[in-house]
Length: 467
Image (cartoon, rainbow, N blue to C red; front, side):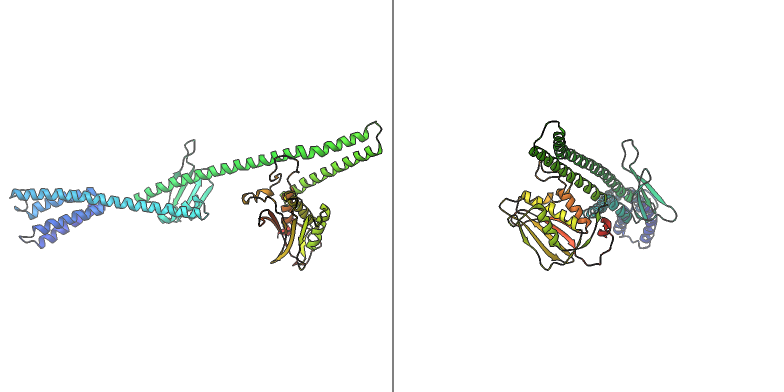
């Protein structure tokens, strides 16, 4: 429409100007002036108004500038040929200009689409959601006041900006569910979009549909992974319980049954049966206690009695409990280490678990090393072994309950030692992290806060210690 308007307004104005400047030799620049008008109209409005201008300017040249004037008759045949060539050339020029303009507009749209997608990709690489990034860039690209992506059930999946006060908006369906209904609706709050903007909007809608589908697939995959992990834990628990609980329970039952038998037993047989029952019931007690402690840690209700204590006391108590001597353990303790704020009982259990684990994997001729040092407002206790170590990708999984690194049988317990140690340490406000031992092996680092605040008289819960 703008091209036709330029032709209908510019044509008469150009004709008036050329008539005012007309001379017998001016036919050349008159033809070129109308040719320029055709090119301008082609640039503004495309092919159709340019062809209309070419025909109209040819008729105007015949009527007003070619003898006889004010008549469509042509005095010389060459003038008729010149007019025909002018119209043909004007049409060809308008066609070429129109194609160039279309290609320029297509390149501009492609550049805008590429810029939009690159911007979205950059946001996603920086950790943003692809859906939110697309919604944000849509509002910026079209200069809208607000954009919302709403699920069919009314849930707002992403939004940027706010709706306009007069309620002007455009709603576009995004994606398609298996039943044919759209997956979501894209609400564009602001003025109406032009045709070029709608082409870009089609690209955005296609990308949003792919992003939503990817999000749904990711959620399904995470749910399946969670179910698989839960099933793996359940399987590991049942497998461990089937062996580790059944074995001491069966031994205790057999021992008690032997003691209750009517056959005469010697004093040595009776003592052996009593020792077997005592050992089996003690093992059952430890296993059940570990299971209960794991449940309390996971529920966040572990009771912690924080007190002022010396790290050396817990280290020596753990060594005594495991009956370890200088041939088993090397000590490199900081004699100036300030007192810790920790639970002595829980810390001793942490150290016992870590030492037992280190001794199980350390070479027989290489002792395990215990070191302490002061790091900022924390103290570190390091349990260092020179065994096979643990790959970096397994550093997190070794703390999962019912996991025993490198084991395929059920002869080494329920696999709760490291899980409990991590839970107890974090319950005391510290951290337990694995590290690689230089030269091979695993180093477990227990970091606990130093005593910097006065003690309370009441035991602290896990949440209070964390705060």
